[in-house]
Length: 164
Image (tube, rainbow, N blue to C red; front, side, top):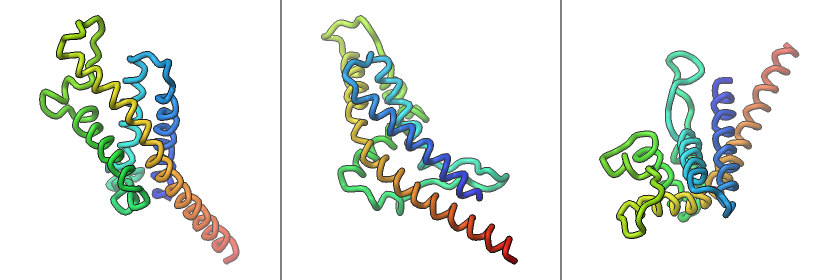
């Protein structure tokens, strides 16, 4: 039952990331909104690969691991790896002085100012993140199949228990 709860939680995170990737493809988004969506996608997607507290005390939460990533192509794996690095080194944990400033959005700057590259980097990352639709979709489908199998297993146990 605990594994099922973890699967449902990961499915919700993957679905959230997928829906926001679709929104990121819209061209009329304000830059602030684009950055906010980007950060939300990275955090939701990345949460599926992090351990944490489980439903029961002393039990860790299930997470997606290397074996789950086997369904990804080489290109999709590169997108996945980039999203996890962004999550771990720039969003969830600011690593070094560069990571502390990567997602700062500054308005009204001179085009020759070096800070323009920071904004461009954020916008480029957000646009590239729409590529996460492929890996997130595959992992979602794989996890959904696993959830359905676990539901069937639990239902069989309930039916067997009632027959005894």
